[in-house]
Image 1: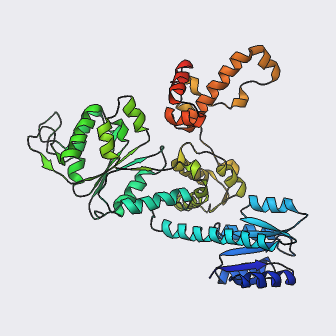
Image 2: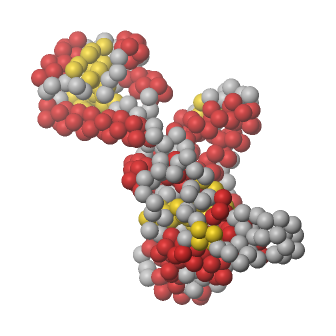
Image 3: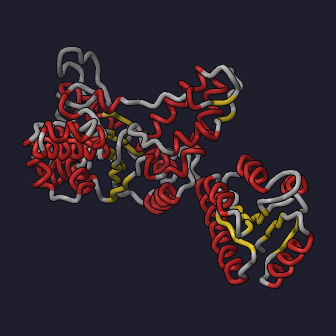
Length: 458
């Protein structure tokens, strides 16, 4: 049964809500103030809390902050006087699920409570699912979809192509698929395709025999032999050369490998999980990636969302990294201020989860107090460092300082500069994917490519 805690310093209001909600089938407890409410929360589990904002002693807003510190996922509905909407807005900004105004509309109360308790059930279900994935921190709707997909595909032998921006945790997803697969007791062998020189890649993938080339002083097993009957994880698959792509395709088709310098083939049974931060469809169009290999790898395509698309997971990740680096550095930095968290929640994280971890690691290392403050956060601007000279990130509002400059430069020049800035911004937000950038700007890929060439943006 859904359990609700009603907090109000007016007995008549507590009694009214208890009678109303009990008739609706809810289990209801009441508290005359914030202190009593916190004591009840120590002893009982509630699905929803309804609290008045204006109370003697601890205010409803103070109670809200206390509850969110203990359980950020707990839905809290605030009761506000008709004349104090500012308090209600402030409560919503600080994590309240919703508010109801006095005098009460009974149907409105019922509607808000149904929505809040449904949200509570969703969060409980999300927490239950996420508990099965200790490798990956998250309870947002976006990451729960990933968990559900992993649960469906892991028991099958199907090859999987994981795609997403750098730093999103693609290898963690691959590890989770292997852990839940039927070959979990076999090897999970990762290889980063971009980290191995071209001349050594064939040997790393397929092995070699002694004397097959200078330095081959003994036989060596490759990725596929090591991962036989298990899982091979090929990260940054889009970096493979055409020759290696052809040889990899043959392995996938024939289920056998021939070591470099060898004369005999070896049968292998390997589940392939590949990952890329490139749009392979674009690579196919450009002739840099084999279409037939793509379809062999992408039997099940799985997109890992960037952190900016699952901002609800930021507090969980921050808490995890705080604990990790406080322990590692032997420091007592266990909290992050609400203002610092607000800074992070407004940031787009071009480097994704990896960048957030770096921010918290640096903050813990440099923080002199026991709480991360906004000034301890160093938000990376590394994307600008990786852009060509014409691609530095600028706000569209920085193009002209004032109206006099607009008229001095002329409309045509300013409009061209504005278009260039929007093109740059779209490239940055899409991780330099022209296809995604075109979609962001709602123009055709052909038009986008023309404009990029026109302004020499790369």
